Each structure stands twice: as structure tokens, then as C-alpha cells.
Image (cartoon, rainbow, N blue to C red; front, side, top):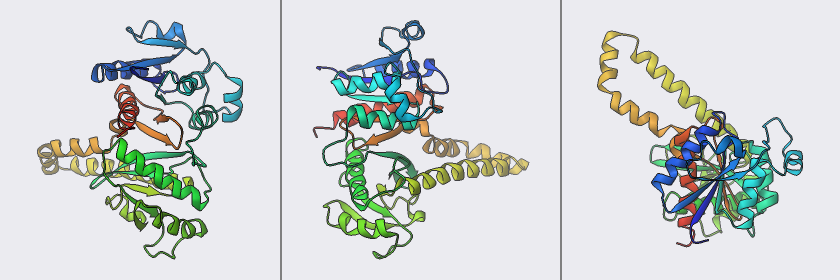
Length: 316
């Protein structure tokens, strides 16, 4: 293909296909050299497409369905059809806000793992005091072998180089202490593997160091990663609410809030998942990005951007 193509599942988001299509149209304007292919029911998408190509996929996989069964039985679902576009080489990447389980299962079966990778992992970009950290795995693999953790570090560092433009990313192993002998069996055995890997491994990474920006890649099993992710989301939302409540409590504080409005707006933007776009499934032969279920047009546009940047820097 002479032109990069990104496939977009229009049926998985909470806001309906219109949000996904609007995101695709924004991406087309921002990246005119890239083709966006809409995947979903033709009758629903044609009136919205505004010239974008539509690939008919009449079925939808819901979060309530068993991933393996859904992927096997719903061959004409938007997730399966989109993944097949990537498998066939008709698309360079795929974005979906649909079922996380179905997307991971389908991507692993249809697209396949990258050579040398035992398990694909879900990476999530979290804001830090110094930029962003990629938390990997953030929910795909609950129990991990030491070799998985090594591979998460490798594919995580590769992603941060390609998409975030970070040279020689710092890789840390999420643990309960800084000392090499700390942790459970998997982390203890993973430590020497990461140390000898050739990565810019900085050692163990304690939870409080993650938001401080001590590492660019935070490696952990999916259970730990998902707890860190959900705690971070809940804490940031709670703190924002508490700050707003205090600022609105008195006339004087309201005046102060008005003066600091610009700064708070910038801070809110840094914690806005829409600015990132989505969480990449890494370790596959091609990039698949899981967009948030409540993604709007901005989020979809930025999820598409992730695929574009990843592929543009693939040969760097």
C-alpha cells in the first residue's frame, strides 16, 4: 500500500458511531496522507461517512459476551472484520472502543503475536510530573512468568520510542521496595532478566515513584497494573473534585480560583484520557489500540494518531 490505512471500529463506543466517525474525519484533516477506513453497518455509516470508505460489518460484539465465543461465532462483527483488515495487510493499525476481552482475544488469534513475544500486553499512558509513563501490563495478563515481564519491558520501551519520541526510555519494575531481593517470585526472577536485557533498566519502581516520573515504562503483571490504573483514575478524579469544592467554598477562594483558572485548565488537560486516545495492545504483529468506552471525537482522533505515529516511526 502506498498510503497508510487505519481501520476504525465505529460500533464499540458508548456515544455511538457518530463520535467515532467525527474522530475519523478530524484525523483525516490533520493527517491528509492517511486513509481512515470505517468498519460497521453500511446503512448506519453511509449517511455519516462524508467520503470515507466504509467496510460493511453488520454484527456487534458486546462486553457481556464471552470473548472467545464471540470472536468465533460473530465473523461479521466490526471487531473481527477490522482485525482481518490488518491481518490481510489492507490496514496498518486498528482502533476500537469495544470489548477489551474480545479485542485482545481477536487480535491474538487473527493478527498474531510478534516473534519472540509470549503474551501481548495492554499498555496505558499515565500522566506524571515529567510527562507520561507507560504502565504495562495494565490488565491483560493477571498472572505472569518472569519472561513475560521482560518482554513487557522490551515492547514498552519500543512503543515509548516510536510514539512518544523518548530516546532510550527508562524501564522500571513495579515492586514493593527498591532493593533487588524485594517482591514476589515473579518479580525477583524478572529483575536479573531485565538487568541483563540491554534496556535502560533502572531497577525496582515503588508505587509512589510512578506519578513522580521516575521511569518512562513501568513493568508489572496485569493484576497489579490494573489496580494502579484504577487507583490513579479514582484518585485524580477525587482530588479534582475536592479542589473544586474548596475553591468554591468562600468568596475569597472563588476569586483565587478565577485567577488560577488557566493553570487548572492546563492541569485538567494533562489528566484527560482523550488527549492520549487509547491504550495500545503491544506485542502483536501490528498495532491495535483500545479506545476508552466513553470516547468522544477527540479521543478517537488521538487513538488514530497513535497508530499513525507508531507506523511512521516503525522504520526509524
